[in-house]
Length: 355
Image 1 (cartoon, rainbow, N blue to C red):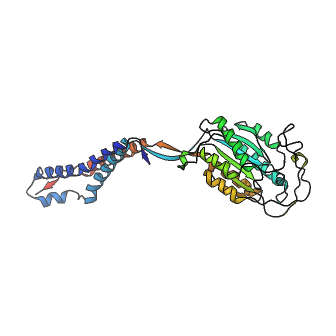
Image 2 (image 1 turned 120 degrees about the vertical axis):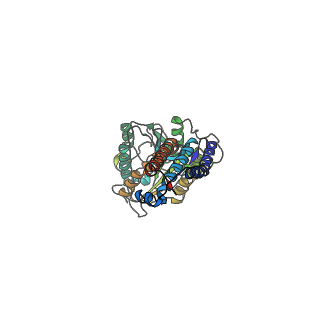
């Protein structure tokens, strides 16, 4: 909790001064009490007053004053709130190994199904972008609220050679920079990442799904440092098993001339036949997540991958923000003070009797 006007907390010093004032008033009241000849008869006629009935109103009233004094300082609490400005960049690995059939029918088919379900499940207004990467990385869909455009792009994903995880992260950063002026494009030297609280992160996040390790381009850790310097979280997903299996692409998964259509360089991958699975570089993916303040997930089948995608909105759909809670302090203070005053009037309405 923080305070916009911390100097106003000096008002709390007024509360302890009320205690000696109450003691002085009680002494005056006892001096002015009525003297009667038969105190025993009067006491027998009046209901007894226990000590807690005398103290509870005082404590409630003082607690109310403390809350009101705290409200003057305009307290703020850091809470998780939904962010309408959030952009989620999905970076999906389309290297040849994504045709491996250890997960039926193959990894790419299951990954694209999970991505489709993730897009459909998001609330209207959530901006999602799509990056595909193999030996190169390309932005297929800039951050958009058009779910149909995203679903159509996912349907066109095709395999190609290589795995450029680091380049996929850099491409995603540039896509975020186009819509968020608070994020600088790659190539702009920002220095080392500055550690900070969760509330200092940008609302935009990157999700990287891959089944292997970086084989070309910039190293993932180097790209992660670029993301961290821009306060952009990167969540990584390692997908697949370590069991040997054939790599079998369907006809619509084969890359043809290239991953990104005619004219771009980079041959397609016609992975019909056996192959050796490349192990997921979990160390590198975990390092990327740790550097950027994200999280690493492991999924070995369709069910686990669906669970990961279901969990992502809770991970990246909110951000920390300081929210003023002065009104709650004022409401609590007024309620406590009036309750204490009311109980005092109710329980102490009869006159004091002294001999």
